[in-house]
Image (cartoon, rainbow, N blue to C red):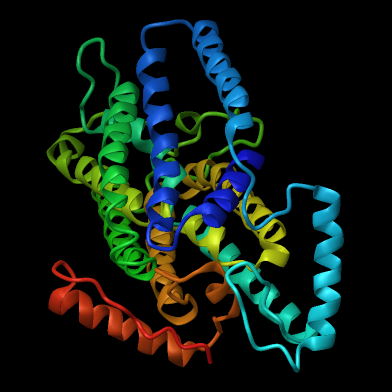
Length: 389
């Protein structure tokens, strides 16, 4: 978690505005690549050998960190940097009424009250983005992909449905996270998140329809979950055994297509983009704190989803939870339109000084983005007028 947070902050600080989104997505692609390689290697070697390989790679990574230059926005002397930070804050407070020039490496001069309110709202907005990243259902679907593939009758000889689902999801993520490198710096942050939220809603609806038709909205046998039952495995907590049935087999293309479509869309939008936003949204004064709080919210949401989804599925079946995921997916798109400001192509000091809570401006700007996308989005780039007020 600490490495994830620090890397996103570092990437946001050292990257030129024109490629900041691409480099942020590249970091996400490395995670998917490592996960897929672990799945493949783990199929053929024992766990302790896989752990040894991962440890060796981590050792090389630690050595290579000594070759990385410090962020240009931070002094090389930590004590000097802290002293300079407090001195800068005092100067900003005294000279807020007289200072108007903002350089690339200077902090925004503003009264403390306005600064605190702006910083708090930025933390809230990014934390909500992190909340939606998990409550669109990504980890529940990733964990439940094996039972879904099994119910669709995709056990092929020695290749189990769980392994087939893992490899399929990993390959889809690899392909589309690579495509995301060409998306975030051309189409910005808001369009991928908006379209992605609507597409994830469709994918969740497809999975919900499959469970409703094949096993019933609330299958018979639901509600018999015991608190003493082991909840460590989602397969032990489903309300009905997901054995292949004639009707489920006939509908098998629907859940498989929904799962693959889900991870394709997620890898293009809600996978990398929230972390990119987190690395660039906060001003220098609170960037580490803001990103740390947002990452903590993200991981708390992971724990919440993964601890409650199996229990809820055991009580009322899988249809209703996936309908909830679909509803959160739709709400995520609404939130992006109303409350998220576009940061594509802006320097960090410009992002720090922009007003992000003007709903009217956000909606107007999003209308310009959609008009550009429909008319010529795949032909030429757009230069938005980024309003400061």
